[in-house]
Amino acid sequence: MGEGNSTGRNIGVQFILHGSFTGGRRYMFLNYHDGMAICREYGAPDLFVTFTCNPKWQEIADALASEPGQVAADRPDITTRVFSMKFDEFLDGVKDGSLFGPVQA
Image (tube, rainbow, N blue to C red):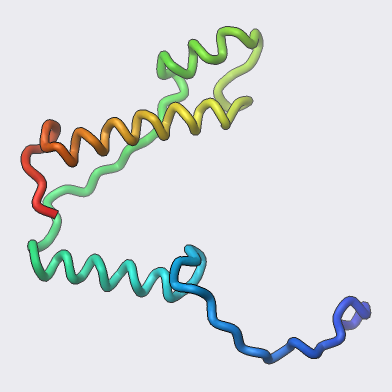
């Protein structure tokens, strides 16, 4: 306001973010309550799984082979896409019970 970029008319005006806005408190509260409802119904979780990316995965190396001199850090689009594909494959394995056994929730 001191630089004259704003009139100050909207200062103090309250607005409510939608519950699907991932940066908002409502989103966090809704996810927390969903998690608590699942724990109440099925019990505490048995596993805490961390899935990380490996820039030396063969799929990333193959994609970078056509661009000499580049590493995985230079192409986050390729790294992210490969990670997403492998994560989806992992999640499918968890859901169908082939990795850790049958899934209840």
